[in-house]
Amino acid sequence: MSALGAGASTTAKNLAVFIDADNLNDATALDHVLLTVRSLADRVIYRRAYGRPESLKSIHAVLWRHGVRPVANLIVDKTTTDSALVIDAVEAVCTNDIHIVAICSGDADFVPLATWLREKGCRVLCYSLANKIFANSESFYDDVVLLDVVEPESPPDSEAKVAAPAQASPSQATAAPTEAPPNQVKPTPPAVSSTVVAVPSVKNILAVLPELRTNKPLHLSKAARKLRDAGVLGEKSSSTPLFRRFPAQFELLPPEQPNTVKYRG
Image 1 (cartoon, rainbow, N blue to C red):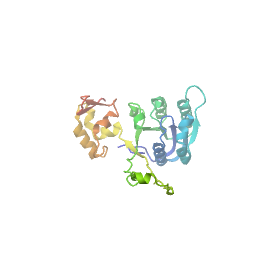
Image 2 (cartoon, helix red, strand yellow):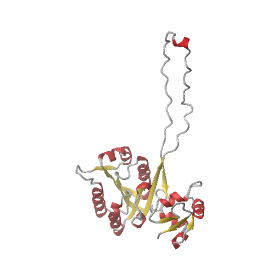
Image 3 (tube, rainbow, N blue to C red):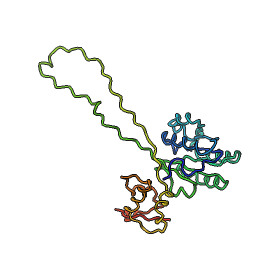
Image 4 (cartoon, one colour):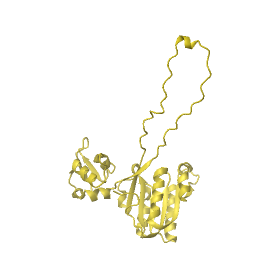
């Protein structure tokens, strides 16, 4: 399972992180990523986030906490997020001794940048929300970390329920109004915090299920059992949604009610 920060060397000297705030603008996920990259190198010398003003505003508290420099789009008809990020990343690598570059976006527009960075000798990491990553991303990055933001279920609000007042009898309805009771303080609902779950990558799945590389169908029950034993899949989770996250790599058969999975290669 590609946990946050897994797969990257911890001996690097300098790291740069570039955030596409128009793509990865979930504050909880971004906070986890920025905490993680700190441990991947001695110094994080570039910390920048690019996007529309409203995108940057939604994560401004996280950017402030981690000392990330926001870079707003120019006021033109088209967004300038991608171009600004690419220019700064190229300049950073050309003028500094940077060993790792973390791109926080699942946008395929950054594939040429990732390819160029790898050719320059940089280790290139991708952090993305699981529902925003493009297909076959692992072919262009050294490591891809997918993130799911999970909202825990709120506990039953039984204590907060107030019994409905009994219906007044006719004699009570004509009685003189009494002094209204003091305002009752409504109980504060429990705070709901989000958690980030790293989604297994194609590389993780193939490491647990190497038989898929033969391009022969594998029964889903067998695949699920091995994935659970390896800790890649939850104890009660189904493997079908996991394989459906990567339609370019895995084919579920038959499509209507699948019982096997095949690696497309």
